[in-house]
Image (cartoon, rainbow, N blue to C red; front, side, top):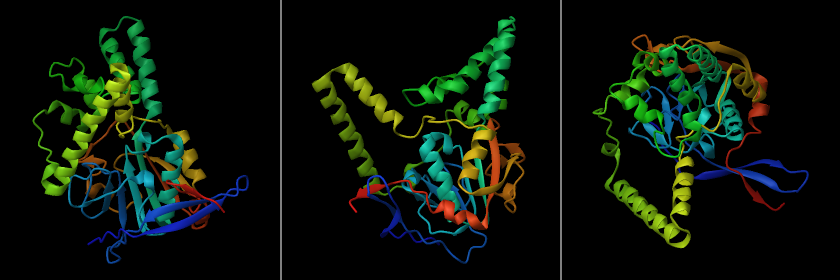
Length: 330
């Protein structure tokens, strides 16, 4: 079993030649069970996790998941894992945070360890968008409907100002005309949106104190909205609400194709970059964990699946990574 240690240790990262300021990172140390071999880490797992892995998420829905914000770094020691995996996480970080996360993955991997990254495939989205645009321009009605969807898929999660954006209501519509096309694009995610009676219980693992804390947080938000409206008006309140929403992790802050993903992985010290199929992996028995496939079906068909390997010399590059930084005068 994992034991979470709350004690933090401070790591000196570098000293700026321009300002003379030292940069530090606070990292929570969480020891892993050394008896588990191999050791696998799943970051930002959401509902998609396996008990044989070490699972980390900002809002855990199960006792097997460690609560942690990965923008504060990965809370494990160097060279701890044989494989690190994250699916549809990287695009929710800005480009600098994304680079830092990849460096952190390198740091916690053992030499020769595998990093598997899954993201929405920007290249495929762009190709389908252009194909549907051309066919819709020529008068094809089905392509016009698919064009509307591809435009949503390309833009909605980057520009939305409320949860679900325009894609949520589109997918929840029981009379959606191009359901087969959307199903081919999104797979399991589309089924979840169509099933309004799905049973995902998040409160069952929360203590009474956690429930109280959540209720108190909601109360504070309502008070904050009222104060902003009273001081600055309804338009300011709307902007405040939108800013809070866009800071909570649902939106896409960047998108990746095979070239840009290869670039940041190699810059972080990884070798042997490879674009994979959903059921193809260097990680032993990967398909048995039902992370990217379930019963032979791809969980997120709109994805780009890639893997790379930490080289022996890559530790030098990984040691330069940090996520949360603070300044202290030299």
